[in-house]
Amino acid sequence: MKKVLITLLSLAAIGIGVGYLIYNKPFEDMNRAKADATLSASELFTAFESDEAAANEQYLDKVVQVSGTVREASTDASGIISITLESGNELAGVICQLDNLAEHPRKEFKPGEQITIKGVCTGMLMDVVLVRCVLV
Image 1 (cartoon, rainbow, N blue to C red):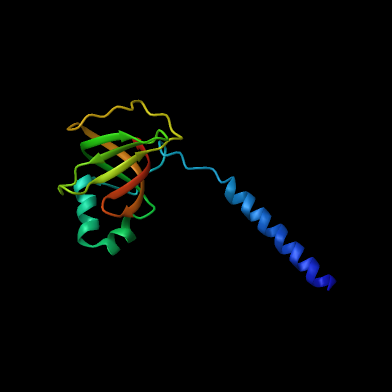
Image 2 (cartoon, rainbow, N blue to C red):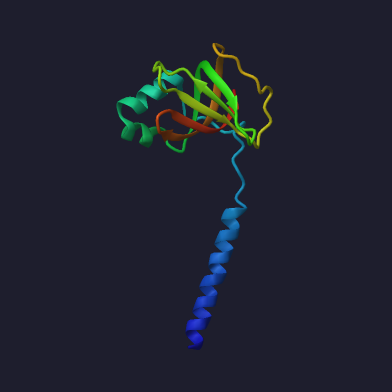
């Protein structure tokens, strides 16, 4: 009985230690992060639209730098700015959510302007989504 109790306490201590380390893991600074891929918003969207499995393997959870034309920009209730880039598809685009932990030189974007942005690709729902984005 004593050995079981010691084993359980040891496992609990290890679990708490691992949880603490994961909780306090620092975020990668997106301004300094090197892009794993650089392409246009329409190329990224086409890659996911034509073969989502292959695109997931190539871009999912990687830092991707995209260039494109702003279709729209909006700010949600929590203050996160989302920029939708043209993809060549009327119903879908590439959504880039600006990183709320980074300083941004600007927060206003007009439809039709060209931008280059870098963020972590989270895949495709209807749109391809990049999170933790910063302007390049």
